[in-house]
Structure formats: C-alpha cells, structure tokens
Image 1: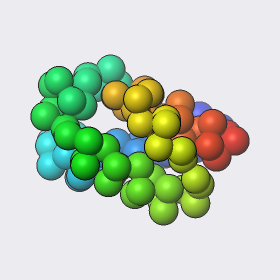
Image 2 (image 1 turned 180 degrees about the horizontal axis):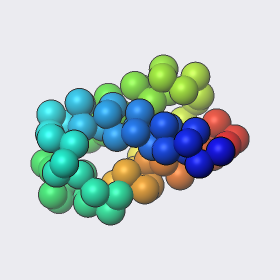
Image 3 (image 1 turned 120 degrees about the vertical axis):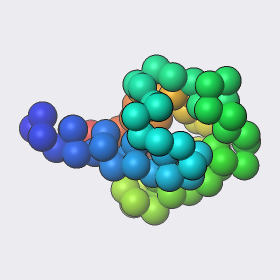
Length: 83
C-alpha cells in the first residue's frame, strides 16, 4: 500500500514540476507553488487538467485554492479519486 501511495505522490510531483518547469529537488511537500515557484493561475489550471487526465478524475476548480503545495494537491486528488 505504501508503495502505491509513494508512486502516486511521485507522479503528482512529476506533473507539477514539469508544468512549473522547476527541478524536482526544488519542491518539498509544503513549498508554496505561487510564492516560492512563481506559479500563476494558468499554471494551476494546467496542473489541475493534467491531474484529471492522469488519474481519470474530475476536480472542481473551487479546489484550486487548496492546491498550494504538493501536500494540498495530493489531498485534493486523493479525495477526487477516493483513495
């Protein structure tokens, strides 16, 4: 079970770092996308769309306000996917 969680977290991290065009080493669970990584709202929507496609889930845009760091993104995706 832990391996699956780790794999999902790694996939989410890859998607986020790819879209934000940053090195995965620069991102921590709690580093803030907007403040620390210069993410704008367009990038946030790109991340949301990529996550929906990757995990075959629907994430309401209202959840974007929670998706401020990897921890938040993982929580939102896991709730949408019912993990």
